[in-house]
Image 1 (tube, rainbow, N blue to C red):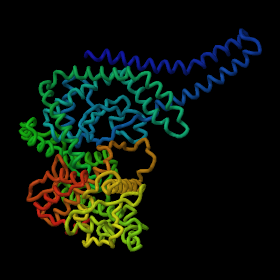
Image 2: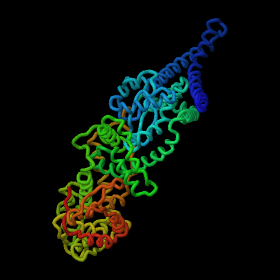
Image 3: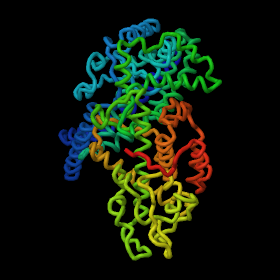
Image 4: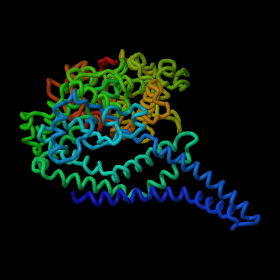
Length: 602
């Protein structure tokens, strides 16, 4: 017997003692009522007070039994949470099932009842034999039968990045966990803890709110023992797997860390921009191989890892790797971005070859349109007095102030009244600072009192307008802050509208997919820098022969002559943070970008 099994079993018994004590507390009033009734029947408790006491105790006992029965029924019937996964049938991966069964035979443990994939860099065993899963249709087949072995959940990036021998070494201690899991005491304790956890979730429903409090109390009482039980199970599984590819497992663990790093960069830098555009990369798992190969090329610590690519990859164990990759990619979008469960007109897959044109270029032009819509809104607030007594709001106020990022609103001619900065941008290129419309109002682009109406002079949205507006506009209360705030508000409004259209405002059900945001909300300054970068890239594509591209580790990039230009970001930050356009102007001039030429928006 492995060293961790006795410890896990003793902790499991401690968890079950908590359940027994809770049952004893629930039965205590009934036991007292039985004693009082028996004493009254035999005449040992005669007299007036005892009749009332007996009646009161019996009423309390009946109420406690009723509530206890309801609580026990909820704990037994409530369905524990199930991780969203992509089920993998034996027909879809016969070689993988054969590998797992061979591991189980070598370690003399029960084989997992089924295999499923998750878009994460982790693997574990998950029990799906609860009766509530069968009633709700969450689980089916042999894994849902009473007393069935747990399901083996494998991180899909492992299948594409790891070789077959490495995957075997990594899965050995996981599969070995089916042995301790089959112990009756450990299985019973796990079922009790999962039932309490599900009861806490049921406590959020109408009429059952009282259930959450005793469920949380019992969870607190058995929390330490349950955690130590799981540690004992893990120790026993690790000890049992010592004799299976132990030396190779040390090397394979290095690949686990590398796969996690590449997967995180691929999701946050490459997949997230596409998800925000309503597209989802259809082959994320294949992309992680390209990302890690690129990482190996850049990082000297990763040298030699690319030589592994000549060995058989673990995805060869699947009959149709492309189909499985597409399913896990869609699930990744649901988990990490909250996308729809199925593809549709507004949620369509994108291939890696089409990513630069369909995602990167569209992203840049959408952000450029939003930037110019925000400039239009700040340039002409309705009712702002001018030198001639007119109003600035006639051209852009009513439409642009609504925060619309539509092509028509952003691509129209600039308002008739603009800042001296924007008016002078077509000439000297050194605009004056913008003012503010009042002590408490936002900063706006307004003309000087003595100056007549200024005219932009450009037929559409231009980069020169952006440079002129942001030059010397940093600082509290200046146009840079107002523009950053406007962009944040417009983006938040668009996201709320999209959530409403998709029905995201509905109450979360028990089978709803949780959302794990990949990044914290971006600040206004970060949004402004992103939008200015997008505008610069659009101008470079339209007037300097540049092209949108994709880097496997950094996402959207600008290609000039087929080479990536990575020196744009500090120059944009210099403009946004310091109001100094000269570094960016020099960069644009060297590239041959015409800042006065209108850019094409979406």
